[in-house]
Image 1 (cartoon, rainbow, N blue to C red):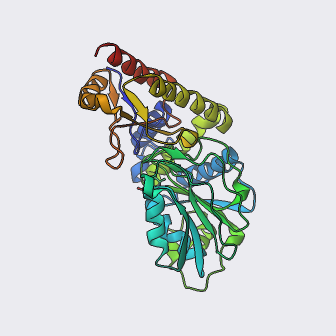
Image 2: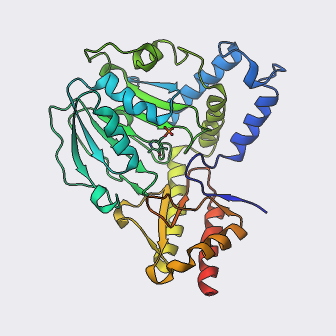
Length: 355
Ligand SMILES: *Cc1c(COP(=O)(O)O)cnc(C)c1O
């Protein structure tokens, strides 16, 4: 039976990505060797690394003021790398979920942290909007999409200090104005590639301003100066990322993907709002287009595991909600076809009819 993959991360990749990556694991670029066993400094892999970085720049319209590097350590490594490289005295953070609060925890090791607002008291069901950011902070950090709680920042705040964003779960899902940010980072396993590589887009003139010495591996300037090849990069995730980026370009780029994402999310949220069994868990205006969280209404709570079983019988995989929210979460990343979202919506409709 066809499987419909709604996992939150690692998560669905395009068939194009899987097929081409599998082929390169067998025979990479006509070398007669596997991608897994050749030098990362050979001309074939250097070309992959360079083309992938160029495509990130092209798809996101990255200005010359910024550079793109592929790093290891996951998005979680960026929680410490950002303050290591940019925090001199004080930084401001918006607390919108588990990942923001982890970023805050790490940053506290480097200086004074101002949490400008938090929706923790309501279990992160909304994005706080009324807050002020200290003008004397070194930067302001936001998490644009909250993978666990299903909220997304739809209006990026305007601030006069450098803006930093964790875009792990919504990079490439909508156009972004890169010039507004000093750093954008994203772990690959939500919308791009297998786990193991993190995309970091860095504004070059934001660097070199902290007083502390920075270990080479944690220093953005070192990675930029070495064309993102300071040490052995995660070759397989980067190869897969290149395939996904090509597939994005072939489809018409980010605006086309955004349009599809809006349509996919709309049919699922419409069904959640219509179906008497279910309700959404977040403020409507902050609903994520990537991670759709919903639970069963109180009077139907006992049907939760029956619905889970019915959904799996329809080939639906990975909709169990995160333990901090419960219920269900359907992740609708770029590679998720609209037809799979329809299968989920149909399952919700027929389950409602048959109770
Ligand atoms: C998944 C995720 C992370 C953590 O990524 P790792 O690569 O596991 O470190 C951080 N931030 C957001 C928004 C995420 O969705």
